[in-house]
Length: 324
Image 1 (cartoon, rainbow, N blue to C red):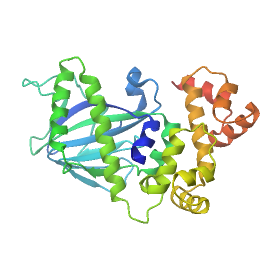
Image 2 (image 1 turned 45 degrees about the vertical axis):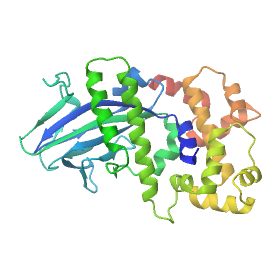
Image 3 (image 1 turned 180 degrees about the horizontal axis):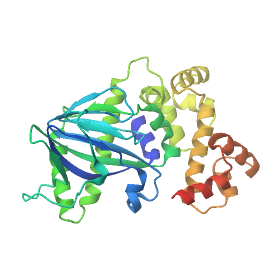
Image 4 (image 1 turned 60 degrees about the vertical axis):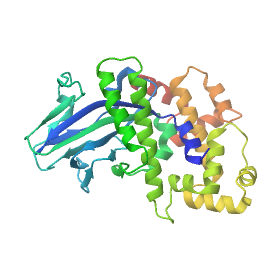
């Protein structure tokens, strides 16, 4: 299995599609999904990554606060890794509608699910919107590696027509409350996201830096996959280098250059991220979580955790539970 697949298994993404829309020019919407709207569907997550997949037509998008305008056409995936509020439409200067206020209860007579609609009657644009839910602490390497808004063309990929047809079928069956529709939509959302990541990684410059550049690299990607696949193991740089078919010094230098920190620093941060997830999702005592994170004492774990997250484990757990 490739390094990206190995790493994504541990990031624990869960996908869902939540709306289908068709607007006619001129139109503009102001949108942000927001973690709270995921409700109990994904209660174990504390972050959402919304996306829009353009099915037909074209549109533009930018962050609400400003920045570059991105033009999108059919087959493009528009991704907001930090769930930023954004403007999307045929004309971004057109007075926007707030997407949160739309009535999504009325189906079309032909039973093809169009939950949102409107506009001025001109050229039509149709798209589906979805989100990936994740735990922010364990997904931080991925989230930090992505820009706040990106467009990824995936419409020319092999099998894309089949994916689009499955989307249409899944949305229609979901509207009918058919058995198995929601799991299908969730898997399709994950499929779109992973394909988008693959395309984005391929587009990175050869001398690019960052976590995704490390995943793309053969040896460093192998080391990352090993770390994520067995975080509790007593890893050493020597062992990682041997399994990645590199010398110790070569791996340490290349890993640091690409990922931005040494292999051992990365392992420490990853174990603390997993510990934060356990604090949030389980009732295990802190001393037990400290042991699983590789710390011989609760005091040492508490100091390291506070340096990383700004609060001791007990306080962080109380705040996380209260927020959930």
